[in-house]
Image (cartoon, rainbow, N blue to C red):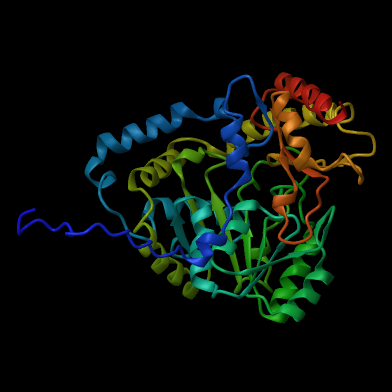
Length: 408
């Protein structure tokens, strides 16, 4: 060994590396991602994913938008952008939000890398380890992950077929003094249910009276194929100063664009912008400009109406097949839009949907067991089914396979 050789003269065991942060060690992965990895083979019929139907993407319109941006403003499209988001896109989003009943200025918005990032930014801006967060029971799984990774104490609010019970919410806020309530009030993931207008007003009143942030996530609201639209909680006068509204193009344009946004009061929005600077500086410029161009040159509302109509046919196909598929005594939701429905098998031995999943996979069909969607007190007899990714014919075949697995 030469004098310049840095290797030690004697062989010693290497010291262990420092441990992971406690929040990382405690955070679990997504069981949905695990199921998708197992069921990726083409012969599987997969009701587990939350994937929009790819054959319904407006690929021509999106390609034309990218072509225009990269042809006419390539230097801008390939350059860094502002953290808050491209002005043209924020202006278009503000106009769409205002047209739907919530007056919004472009400066009220922060563009995010998917609405999932918005949850992480809000957790960074609002939560200290040990703070309490209230969520629906059951709740969107990735929200549980985001709040859990922030070290929050997550408590489920009792819900019925219409969603959050306002009286139970009020009691939990009084007892636990949470920082925020997270809700998907329209076509909720995982249940597909929609919170009625009267309950939205009651939730807003609780937040105003008790001092509470509301995070209102609305990724599915435009995908309505039955019934009448219900206004945002964010539009309620009692909640305007304390509601963060999240939106996304993932379900109405394309998830691969990773374009979401949040609308929040000024101070919180600024705190989220600082958190975003530390996370990724800004959302990809080319994607933002292409989306802005798409909104100018294409009729997104007409496209969404077409997609929602097809999703309605697929929901009907699933509803038609469930009575012959699920065990006698099962119940399920009948969503008026979105992508999911929620089923509950009868209580009793043999109806644990986590244990039954391996039987379904053996029949080349998959669902998501309901237990991981609960912050507290999971119901082992529940499961989530996505009805939008397969055609009605594939849905019928998948339910036939599922029936064999559950009843065999």
